[in-house]
Length: 392
Image (cartoon, rainbow, N blue to C red; front, side):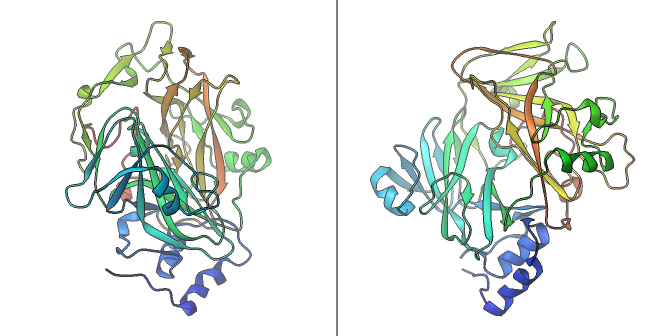
């Protein structure tokens, strides 16, 4: 197997470029980080893994069925695995099936060799979240999920819990992605968001018109509502996962009939919907969202104080989401799809109700590729879109 170079004279190139800067690395710098050995693998890193501001992480050939979730704290993951593993199995070749409700841990192909100021943040890919797969990355001696501390050197592991459907996975598939930061992330507060918004509006209405800054809600990000009205009585405003279904093979794209797995829900007369406890729903934002190429956004759950509603599993927006180069300030924006699971009690939601907020952060420099049809992004012009495994 091929290894990426770790030549120390080459390593200095990216660190020289990063001097005096902070934020998340764009596409071209992530490529440099891989060439220079900060991210490496015995399996060659593929060009398709590089996204505008993240790197897709691939499942390794071995999987562990474990009895419980854990954080290693003062131990390595391998040491913890000896205590909680029920059995292990091979997912190379034809792959293996992950049962609904069971907990699995799979070592990832990529390993890290971060310098002192470099850190990482992982999140599920959109297609993973829309399948109701709960996934998170853990590392040796880690005390938080999905966070890679500065100067980390070692393996990464992915915990996977299929919630609604059993799935078939195989080595090489990507369910999560890694953002790489330098020094610190740079989150935009209200003062930083106002000039950005007025220069490149972020929220648009159904007719394609920008929503003025003074009409949006801003506090530690921009707040977004849920669409339960649609445009007609026949419009589907949500999908509810069916409880009994067959296995979904994650190597098959645009393959499965949605009716076998999802119950479509049309708009109610009063534009309300009562969500059932521990059921999984796919819903859509009221507003269209446009992320300028020099920014990235993360969907952060907005919950009532009682905390009985989880409103996303993935929720990361690449630079260029909903953006079209050269377009006027009309007809920009793409709907955000929300993965929703209420807890404990039935929960009523209404059209336009606040569902989440978008936290915006700066990229160190504009990526040389951005989200959209030019890089064959799966959801670049989405409405209420299911995961890529289902027929359109």
